[in-house]
Image (cartoon, rainbow, N blue to C red; front, side, top):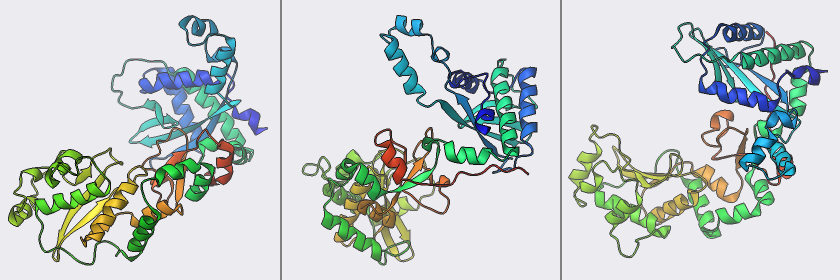
Length: 412
């Protein structure tokens, strides 16, 4: 059976994990034995159809959980205080390796004669025709395991068993899928309550109405002039709508200074009332390195930006902030600007409106993948939120998720 052929049984999952951890620290191949084994791996993979750029090939490999003695030394753990008894040691082992077998995605690429092997996205082996002189490190045990696993997998492909076995047995935590947000909320109602606690139903309805009427790429009207003071006043409206600190005692400029990113590129130094100074500063292309429009500071994907835009018809604002944790703030920012008849365009407006009403999808990405910037895993679709399969209510989630088909491995 393929199940038996899949294993390279001379190593258990804890042993494989140790070798991966060691190899990713010094991935360059520096010894002849590892080089020979690695070249054999690539040779054996040649009949498999390429699935991406740079001769990308991917295979699922499996290692058995093995014996508890292969996980760690009980006496050492006991002596170091990591566990207090044998039962705790066994619980720790099973928490690290809950399934009888562990799955690994092996990826290989060839770029300018450089051969690279990745396991679960980690570069573990790399052969370069001109070595960089890395400190010698023998990785032949890992290369040998990979070669045996590849040979077993290739045999299973020839027998027509590989794809069926992977489709039926690959853990959901290794898969890609999507779940309607309203279904996710039914499983985790506290998530819905927490997300919507600072916004009222009538605000959601008003926002959805405005977004339905929003043009494709910009507002329908413009302001005929813009100053730094006008921009700070727009920011203040958003800060007030979200009850930011300093509403009663700070000026608009001081509130911007308090809550914005800080890299203002000289915006704070302008005469607040000068149209000419702002226009000159705005069109100065020698400015760089700042974030003057990051009006609510945060991380790369968790800040809110209010961009000033200008074209032949005048000035307008472009608002962006679609992360789950900041989207409600962004919506309240948008509503107050719209209510004051300020021309503002909401980036990802339709997607945020769907998120507020639970009618969008959450992308489910494999464990080990950070759930941010994952749209490339969902070609033709756009999600604002991604997550790994949670450990709570796992069975309910597995049933509610729409799981995508697993890419089949084909022989040339």
